[in-house]
Length: 264
Length: 307
Image (cartoon, rainbow over all chains, first blue to last red; front, side, top):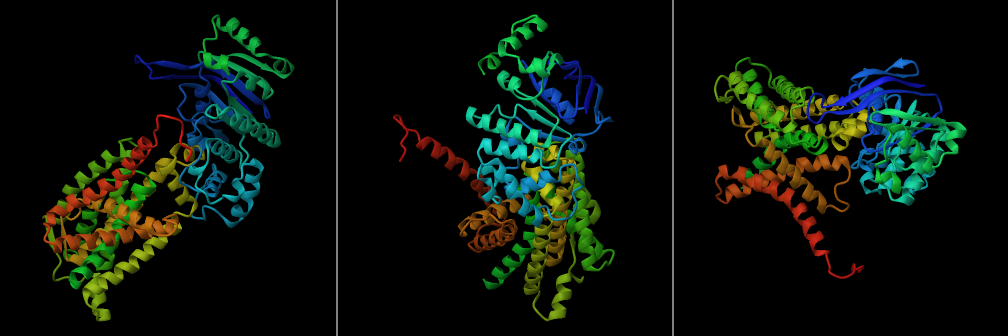
């Protein structure tokens, strides 16, 4: 269970570029929740994920994971509990290293790394079967450098890497935004499969409202650094894009001024 | 000529150990570490002073030179990880400080060890082989051992994490690696090798000099790119990690052969640094210019030419 209480973050405090990114987020994710996060540019979606992952230190508030306070833990320390996929397909994998090496690095997420072999024989034997599930033909290219793969292939690989050892929480930060529509839908299907198969607690930021409605069991909308709308279950399933737009206008008292969201 | 040739080869191999150090930072960590010029002379100074003034066994002195080099790397490491000084500047700062420190260590700018035993003179006495041959042979053995150890180390969990740090820091941090630590390990390891090489060179040339490390980083980079260019000529190129390490040493030998050749041709030894820089510049420029040329020349006013 993930619990955020009064989480606040302001960037460049006291300067002209001051940005109040999170203005007090209270959020509880129950085990197995698949929550999609939407909101306009600068609403704090990515910051929310980055704060959970420990990329920046908190200004105030508490983040608890399974009852454990992780607010002051560093990014590498929190990595033990978190699987992460970034928006940029280049960010989730090491381009100059082999597919098998990338997987082996991911397999040791959060574990002590010592002088044992970085890739074991067992891993070399077991990884192809996992890659086969991606259905991208990567299982026969274990020794290929990841830099040779397409963005979609890399993103699918990152997804596999993030969930190779079961994370307590999967953080997806617009992980299909940089892909073409066809590849994006493939990666999304894969996301659904992997999340369902492992019953992962997931927080997925997206700018695509249809995806946000279709996927997961719960949807939250963010605006100006906090959660303005939180809907789950049947109510969420019956949502439509116009509903969401209307909801946004109601709560924020303004137009949903984000063309990217309207178009997608 | 053959003496010059042999000298160049043995020099190339001993410097090759320094090149391996540079390879770790430049190719694996993706930062050109300027500490190298200082830590190379530091290794030499420490070894010379320990042998001449403290009468320490030359092999032990070399170990001390290696540790000193590692410490220099640690200082650059702290500056760049803890205090977030850009890596190049951190290296320059350490390098400059080491100039003064090396002078303090030696107390003067040059320490000859003409009357003292070195590991090479010991080995020469033991085997009855001439010293130039011995230093080449010992250099080869040491280089092989180091290449083997590095090959093993970079295949381990921590070694893989280190390579990933140079490749994609965001990713490896998300996988739970403290990248400050991996950078630190790389800088210490790299400069320890550079210090070791400084100590070996000091014993092989029988003196340590305050300026012996000047331009070492450029020699290292030149040797690496020469090795890579030669490696490209191999069938299949340079894909295996062990081959990349070996190529760095081979590149160093070729560099010193070129150097011996151009000196033989009558070039001023002081111009060698210019030549080294030109080699590095060319190696870095050619791929960029080639890429741009390909992009420009692939333009056509009409449709794509699918040919």
